Length: 220
Image (cartoon, rainbow, N blue to C red; front, side, top):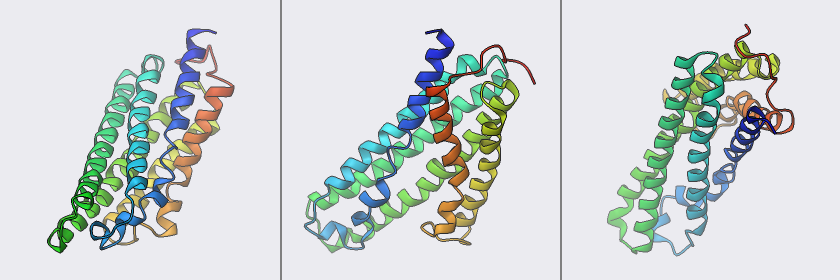
C-alpha cells in the first residue's frame, strides 16, 4: 500500500466517522423538553450523544490534518485554511457539548424550578452553537475542500462539484435559520444540508474503495 493510498484510506474512514452523531437528533429529544431538569428520566441518551459529538469533532480535525500533506501541493494557503476551519468547527462542538453536560449536571443535582431558566438558556445556546459548528463551518469546509479536489483532480470532478455547490446551499439554509426565516427543525432547513452530507459520505466511500487518482496533482 502506497503512502498516498494510506492517506486516502485513513481520510475516508475519518469522513465516515463524522456521521456517527446523526442519532443525536433523537437522543437529544428529552433535553429539549421545558422541564427536563425537574424530571426523573435517565440522561444516558444525552451522554451518549455527547460522546458521539466528541468523536465527530476529533474525526473532523483528523480529516483535514490527514489530507493536508496532499492538498498543500495544490494550494497551501487553502489547505491550511481547511485545517483551521476544521479546528474551529471542533471547538464549537466541544463548547456545545459543555452546555449540555452542564444541563445534565443540573438534572442530576435535583435542583428546583429556579434553575429552569438557566437550563433552557444552555439548551438554546447549544442550538445556536450547533448552527455555527455543524452548519456554517461544514459549509465553509466543503467549499474549500471541493475547490482543492476539483483543481487537483484527486477524485472525480463531479464529486468535487457536489461539495462546491453544497457549501453555499448550506450557508443559505443556515443564515435563513439565524435570521428567523426558517425554524431550525423544519424539513427545509435540514434539506439545505443534503448536498454537503452526500458530498462527505460519498467522498468517504470513494477514498476507502478507490483512493486518490495518482499522477493528477497540480493539474488544473
